[in-house]
Image (cartoon, rainbow, N blue to C red; front, side, top):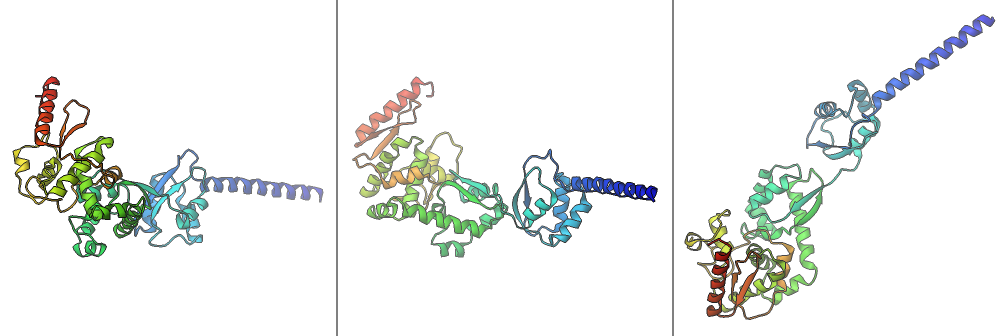
Length: 343
């Protein structure tokens, strides 16, 4: 009897040990690899379960397909399509954590950075670098005249919707959701700091302010002189002078790589060419920074109607009230270029 009890205890102990070993082996299969750095899984819209499983296996996020299959089935994750989005996977998670997170956890947002894009095509390409839809999807929406008319824009003025900044989005944001957000950000921007009232006081719409700001943006990189330069253009508009802004002639020809503006640019027939047509161009010639927009809204009051680059490498300009003084500044510019060996 004693011998039987000993055998029974031995069998029980062996079973316990075997169970522990089996549990350890199974637990290891549950674990997301410990050596895996934090990783982001991108799940496109309408992805099916098997495609996602293959992606997770190829990236080494799961080690045992069979265990993952069982858990996915039990946790009601094995269905098509799986939830789309961008998800951060943490090292040390097990497969239960992984499936639970993919099934209903928060997405990891992305930052969409808008800076100084020139054309709507550039905006579409820039945004598509950060979120799921293709640039052609965005461009198609930008060119949908019925849609942009509902937003209150034309194909020429649509660029003024975009306020350069860094925005947080979900990776699988649709083009229309993106535009809804841009509209909200645009309205929020113009509601701050009395911007709308300042525009109205100048007899300008936000789109017109933005258009002039886009010219200032391309004329100077020096923030401190933007309000003065904006004042020059406002003075020209007030007295009916041609704006004669070099960046508008460049935009009209799309010759963005030209090192200097020539007769070809200034005589190119386009409503955007302010050497040929009075007033503002039909719309912005690029994105305008917040600094340039505010420079127009808070333009310096003065009597200058001319400006000329100093040519000394500083990026600054000399300003003048008369054509005679402007011609003197132009001579200074040429002399400075000569001193620098550029003429």
